[in-house]
Image (cartoon, rainbow, N blue to C red; front, side, top):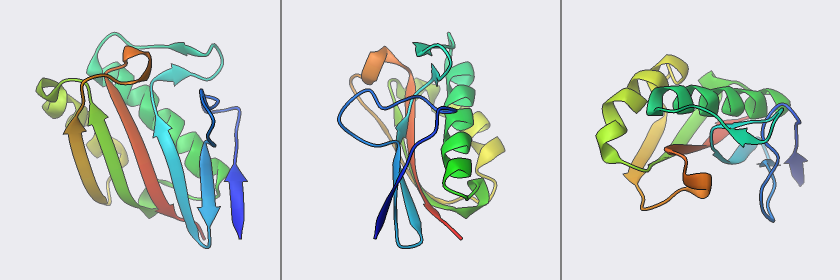
Length: 125
């Protein structure tokens, strides 16, 4: 059985997809970018401030699904510039203290020309 996750505390989907889906006891969350859900606008001038907003948005999706950062088993991180890797990691490490499995790649362009995007897979209790 599939359950769609939706919360107004995280940015609305900007395309034909859901914020997240629960299948069994697993949450598959769509990638989050640094959009303020209240305004729909990208916020943050640098990688650190954008990464913090991404983590806040992920936290809201996890909460809406009834789970938390400590239950994340896999992340996929997309950076617009691999030179931002160290600064991104500093913010990332504050939230993902259980050190889930991860992939991190640089891509040519991200939606709305943001500096980072992160998607997660988490266990739902």
